[in-house]
Image (cartoon, rainbow, N blue to C red; front, side, top):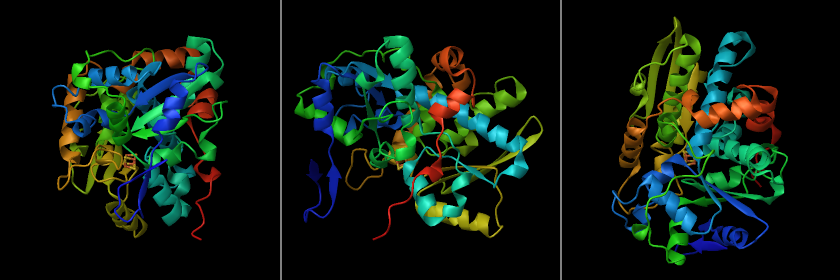
Amino acid sequence: QCITHCPTGALRERDDVRKVMDAVNDPDKIVVVQIAPAVRSAWGEGLGLPEKMATEKRMAAAVRALGMDYVFDTNFSADLTIMEEANEFLERMTHREKYQWPMYTSCCPGWVRFLKSQYPDMTEQLSTAKSPQQMFGAVAKTYFAEKVLDTDPSRIFCVSIMPCTAKKAECALPNINDAGADKDVDVVLTTREFDRMLRSELICPANLEEEEFDSPLGTGSGAAVIFGATGGVMEAALRTAYYALKKENPKPDAFKMVRGLDEIKEVTAEIAGIPIRAAVVHGLGNTRKLIERVIAGEAEYDFVEVMACPGGCAGGGGQPITEGREMAGERGSKLYTLDKKNPLRFSHENPSVRALYAQYLEKPLSHRAHELLHTDHSGWDMPSKA
Ligand code: SF4
C-alpha cells in the first residue's frame, strides 16, 4: 500500500500500517515495539500536540493504546550499540596496523548505502556494530523471547517506529537477520506513519495519561537519546571510551564540542594520554567533502560519525514535514534537554544493558555478542544500476 504525496504520482512513500495492524489482530503474535530516540522530538508535530503534552511517556501510552503488547525504547539498544562500538573502536586502536583508518559509524543505513555505492573500497572501515534498530530486534527475538517470556521467537513480531525511511530497507538486508528468527525487525513505521495510525484509530494522545515504557528493554541513558542529533553517537561513544580507558566517568558534558549544526566538526579528545581524532559530519554532500579530504591526505581521523540527513535523525526523512521550516535544530535541542534530565548519562551504566551482558552476552565483543549484534557489511551487494 502506498501513500502518494507527489501530484504526478511519481514519488511514493511505502505505508506499512496494515502489516502492523494485522499482527496486532493476530492472537499468535506478540507485538513488540521499539521507538527511536528522534521520534520523541517530533511525533507531536504531526498531531498538533502542544510540546508539553508530547512527552516520551505519553508517546509510550499512545503506542500501547494502538494495541501493541510491549512498548520498548530504542534508547536501550542505542546504549548497547555504544558498548559494542566503543569497545570495537578501542580494540581497533590497540591493533592499529591491522586496519584502514578512520573507523566510521554504521548506524545510519543511508550513509552505509552511500559508502558502499560511492566508495566500496572503504566498506571494511565501517564499524561492524549493527544499528540500534537491528540490535534491538536481535535481542527481542533471543534474550527477551527466551529468558523473559519463555516463548518461541517466531511469535515475536518486532515493529520499529523510526524517523527514517531508509530503515525500512535496512531491516530487509540479508546479512542483518541472523538472530535465529527470519528477521531481526519485521516492520518499520516512520514517525509520519505512526501519527497517521493514531489519527486513523481515533486515538487522541492529549487525552491519555503518561505511561512508563515496559521493562527490561525500555531503559535508556541520556547518552542514548542524543543518538537522534548529529554528534550524539560520537559524544556517547567518547563518554564510554573515556570510562573504558580511565576506569572513571568523565563529566557528562565533557565532549559537548561535537554538538551543533556545523557541516563538519573536528575534535581531538585526549583520553588517558591517547589522542582520539574525531570528526562528525551530517548530510551526504558534506560527507563526500570529508572523505575526499581524507583520500587527498588533507585530513586524518581515527573515528568519524556520519549521518545522511542534515541535522541527523532529528531531521530524518520519516519525520513530520513543516512546510518552509527546517526543524532538525529545534528537535535536537529537545534531545539534549532529555539527556540532561536523565539520571543515567552513560551507556555503560544502563542497568538493563548490564543485566543483558551478565545473563546472556557475557561481555562486549564476546562470541555471542558478535553473533547477534554485529554484521558483515560485505555480505550484501548494492542493487545494480540497471
Ligand atoms: Fe535514517 Fe537519516 Fe537517521 Fe540516517 S540520519 S538513520 S537516513 S533518519
